[in-house]
Image 1 (cartoon, rainbow, N blue to C red):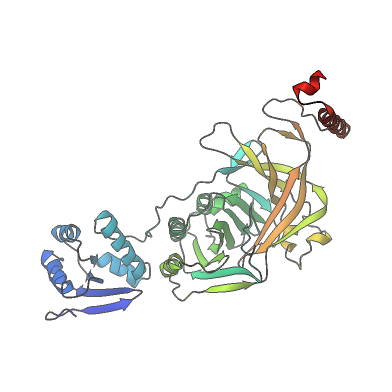
Image 2 (tube, rainbow, N blue to C red; image 1 turned 180 degrees about the horizontal axis):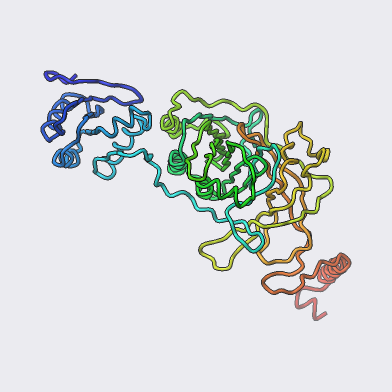
Length: 464
């Protein structure tokens, strides 16, 4: 295709056509090499991309030549990048996509010389909620637990609403992550391409203890030092592996990430991740599936597909009799643009079903909520928000919503309060409604309406 000249490799795939020159030599790639490849590209169609692989380096003038004339795209892979590809620490398609983006958008030649991912430095959403217990704030709380793997969440998007016969479609991906940097890069890509929320929930399960928290950035921060969590929980022994689950709203559906972290034998040793899976559930197959195709290519799952979800795994059960909660902490939503504007949106409470032999009959959903009896503290969604500082007589658990998210059981206990005793704004008792007084007011209003109908409305009628 480059006649009368020769070319080394022609590669086609993933809607790309690549004209490749291989330079296995000590001499650096210079302007002459760039001009030779550009001459070959001039004899081909405009969709062909030129690529140079070199085991040495590229000169500064050659880089300026590529950046100054972008009528035909030329990408360069240097020795360090070739080694990353050899060791499977980078994916070729991802590097091509990143190099093209930098050349088109920023007009610069980009090289990846380290193991850091392309989206490692994307700013992740910061959580606007924090847990408050014993006058201390934190991004997570710890609870004793048995053999349980459930995750608490503030919301469970219902992808089957208005979709008869199905609960939507799922896209399941398996990833070969091993480090926290790679996990951070994955979250960066998901947030860059789709947008994560600031209220995603996470759970870390260890032998005898679990940690529940809010926010993807907080999850990555907590995972960096497992031994500090163990010391804070006064754990004497632990399993060699901990299970990690992250659940979040995703477009008009939800996303769950499950992975396992091998705990180092000593605090100074490095941990690593394995057995990582991502599941995305949507109401249906999107009309524009290109973002999901790009995601599959980015994580090396080109053969993944959407699969129909049969049935309706999201269930809501209300208790016949509300259960009084023993609250040990609150979940407070804060606002950056409003000073002293803090609202309680959730509760940390002692689980009324902890270590019980069985759940109430209305909560026995074919064993789906058995994990609820294994966790000492529950994370409860407060349906009626109140301002932080308001005094409540009692909090009540009204029911539980649950869903099977393929890799984890998602549980959303929900409740409310009974009566506000004092408000933080005025610190005065709130008068409760008197049914008898309300009835008298209604009767008085009815009498006034009847009298108004009988009265004359015109001036002549009033004079008579």
